Image 1 (cartoon, rainbow, N blue to C red):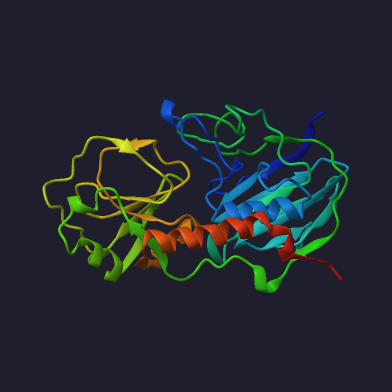
Image 2: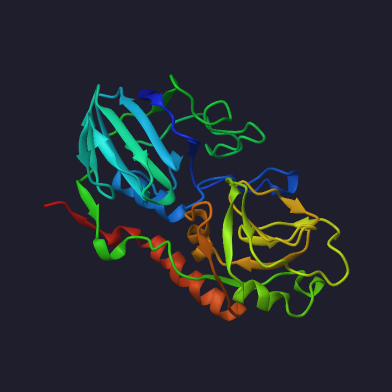
Length: 316
């Protein structure tokens, strides 16, 4: 039986319930949604004693404040470097904590990175919609009434025994810096021959227009060969679309399912968190790789996620 395990005191800037995503419905126009940074979601969940794809709280730029309503609750904060405290006492991220009823959890402004995840024992047990608890605010699906969290929301959960007290090994923490690897997109030939060189050698930065749907980039304009309108086709996570103004945008978790702008490239799955964790006005650089290199990187990344428990050690 579910019960209220957390009360939202202050929700932060853009806070939602997210899991690994809503799959199997894109042909009906339903976005996958889910966590922008799947690796951090999985780490937070495992530290809290949950299946890796359980529903957790995704926070953007700042975390907010929450009151614990369960008798005991395992929690773990992972992802962006947001200060964590319990009843005003600082606490370390990337490890299991067990807190009691009435504890005030506060999560401050990110010092680096953009998105953090609060995993809670038993997961956030909101009603699944089309097989997922992920929130997609544009369509009002999932989460709490299909929207971002607001003050006073009560988050349900299933009481669970506290898990072993673990911490993430220092050398196994996710890395959000470095180049973002891309492969040529399905409409790369819609651009002038030097456009891919511009994309990989140009100096781009994230604009202030950034959300869960896309990261909009500012930098060298990518020239089209014969205009920018195409017959709409499918969109995947990491698709780099180029609208008529010539500035690229990278599609993220809340992306649309089809689009009519040409896609010059696709960011590979292992590097999507490097985009989703970049803050407005931060620089971003791309590196073009072959399909074989991308596949090898994906296999290594997926194997790492499958063996994620190897990243943890017992707390002393």
